[in-house]
Image (cartoon, rainbow, N blue to C red; front, side):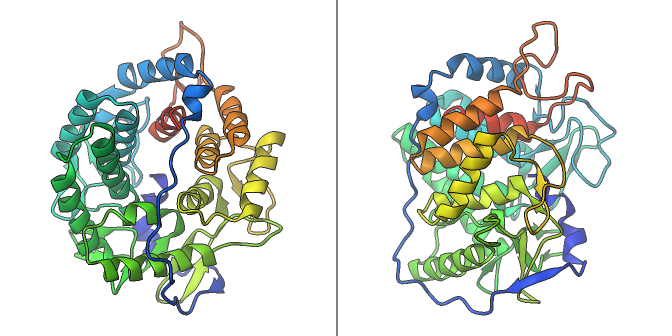
Length: 374
């Protein structure tokens, strides 16, 4: 995802500290069961919107190497992925969509493409540039977790153990390379043989950690520590979102501002294991109802822009599904649908993007696509 764009820069920069997390006692809880997806999208009969979006994604936003980062192409040489570069993030999101909708042929095709384009020694490269024929030698924990989750969901959806070996293989790589000193890190860079010194909180996906093929006691210790770190990033009851990252060297949380997508993903991860705070859920619902959930905030909750993001409402809908709040799901999807483009004369027809500039981003569209089946 886009939060990984500045990984290397962040790892070398001293950032603002706001609180500390000194020790993480092992929790008594034996495991963390993943809350089921409620399938509210099917109940609300969203097939028309979903079909239009799928046609846009597969017909306009996809090329021979996968889903474009942006519909508008670029020179593909920026620090961040742009244009028709492809991301393992997108592969994982599409794989989850195909698994949850029971499309095995499309799932297998997408997984084989992901392996061909992104496979590296440490797991999956987070980014590939077709124009430069450049596969980046860095993975991203959050993206690899999505692929692991997709493999597990596919096994359940298609009633087969066919994906178990692949899941175990890539899960072992993730643990071997992205866990250092017993703690999860954002990435592993093969070129420099290094991880970073922090964890971005929205990368802490406990439900997917359950899939790692490691000894039970190691898994419990890792999950316990990471859950404490995630939970410790809670800002306040007055502004119940979450810090951006936790630095292991300084033992402090760090945020320049609160990116709403990142914070909602943290809450979604917590909600999936029944650990989301009621204050956070109530805040999200009230903001969605009022249409005031914007893209970024200061640490004390002041809006920093007036951006209404497709992905923000998609994630809010997913939170509604896993917390059995159909009203939140429906409200969020309604807000999200207001951004969908319905213009048969536009290349963006059925998608989410900016008609004036012709730009449409993979993350927004694929998160919306996934939200429709939650």
